[in-house]
Length: 115
Image (tube, rainbow, N blue to C red):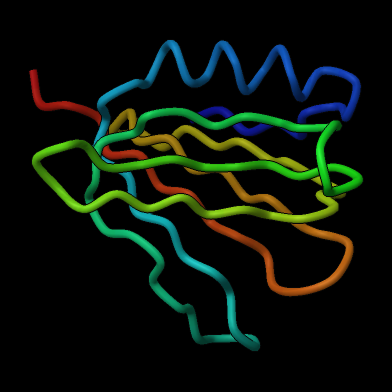
């Protein structure tokens, strides 16, 4: 099991590499609501990619894109991210937590393919 906090200056490189390494893995996206509740944004949809944007109409944001032509497509945006944490569990599943400056954290769960 491996956990790490990703330094802000490495977000672009980390998320680009993450997107390449885990493209197609089933993803569940949740937003934390209060201390015990979560709101589901996507469930078990294939990862298209995660990007960090410092240009455009927002000061900075992270966009998570999941789904495919044959399934639903979801694009979830986290505005003004402050922290990104990554954790790999003993089953090889990957979990990201993105904390914004304002609002609930977003949890991204990638399910490792069965070998």
